[in-house]
Length: 327
Image (cartoon, rainbow, N blue to C red):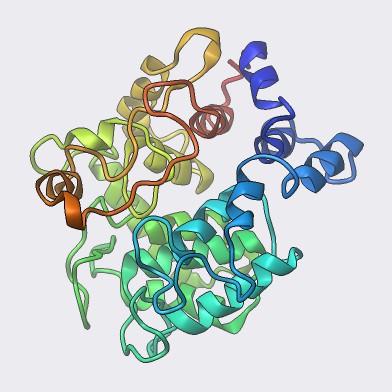
């Protein structure tokens, strides 16, 4: 790996990035003093501290009337980011928020949905995938509601593999690249907990993306070729590379275009820029925001678009490591 990029990620100003770099890229054990020190500092300095400082004593961000809105500054979105920053349910603030989150979003069929408040019948693919992924990373993979969500993915998968966030009810037949969240959840879910049907669902879901080389669906959609963070529920090719390599498909030749794009985007010093902030200006939501500024969603970003990004660089190097490349 390029030493300057690693040194940059190991700077003390963002201990969450330092901690993740130590364990994900350098494979330091959790008992390592430097790892312990970085982990302890996550809530004391940097992005996680800033986000947690805005949490209410009741455990939410914004309003308790909806943990999903306003986009992208309410509880749902803050928890998705915090799950990426190495925090777990061992932190009381995280546990309090997650308990509210699960109770609020859980649906009668075993999924999760953002507008629920404990009453909806059907889960939503994108919300269920995001919520399950984050809860596993927080340490709730043995919670019955989380375990049920992974069964839900199997039940609601399209017949030929893949999912669609836009289908409602059963049986689910639609599928599209934008509905990537179930595979991202499986990517962090312990393989020992996969049932035979889950393994089959992952294989069929992965094949759907591989058939399309992670980007071929209809007319060229420019936001997929730009790297973003936070991801929210949007897809881009770095998102696809991250979960596909985590699931073990690094050697598939149909990944070559996506890998070449990743390498092409590498900047001086081995870093990657964050290309844009969601909602991407060329996405339907981005265009709607431009035309309806008074009703626009609220963008949220840890870093500045067009400049080197620690979160993008960390993810990119994690992908390259799974590809067996050291630099």
